[in-house]
Amino acid sequence: MAVSDWKKRLVSQSDLLSLHEKLKDAGKKVVFTAGSWDLIHAGQCRYLQKSKAYGDILVVGVSSNDAIRKVKGPNKPILDEKIRAEMLTYLKSVDFVTILPEPSCVPSLGLLKPDVFVTVKEDWTSEYKESKEYKTVTKYGGEVLVVDRQSTSVSTTQILQRAIGGALSDTLKDYMQYRKDPIKEK
Image (tube, rainbow, N blue to C red; front, side):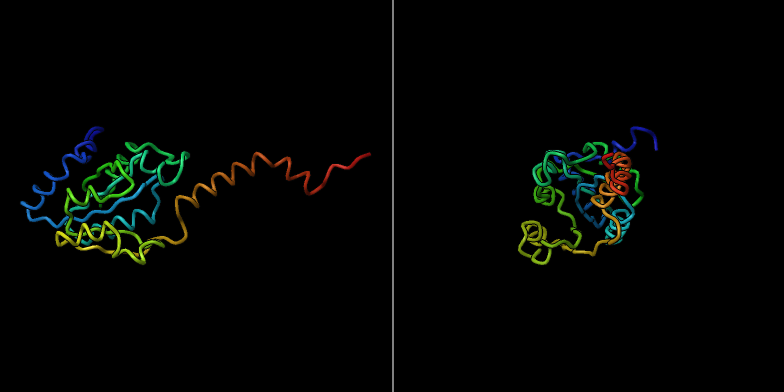
């Protein structure tokens, strides 16, 4: 893939409707999923591969920097939205990527009208049939699938905690030594 080839797979929000028409005319079954995709790991790759298996074309929504900050606070995301979007285009299961301006993917679902919307099982998904996403997708005849996490042993948060913990451990090594053998007054 040439350096700029990934940009051909990046679809603006304003082009989602025309992408829908193009893929529908070609008889393709479209699957959509969304997330922040901040530090991609094996569980996320498995999830994307599983999502792709529900159709012919997988379109992935990437939460914008602003959307993530609204939900997760000022210290997130770690990587810029364009870097996260580009990374996804290199995965063979991903056909197109779009950057989501808002925390909700409802506007994107309304424009793209995927045949299948896949979301990962979270605490809130126990009542997913009450969500705006579910109502948007089923209103035009689409299907919503909730799938289990594809890795329970690794998450972006766990990766960060381990990295920070390791760095903190190195930084505090001298301190830890004194904790084991406290400095004594002579």
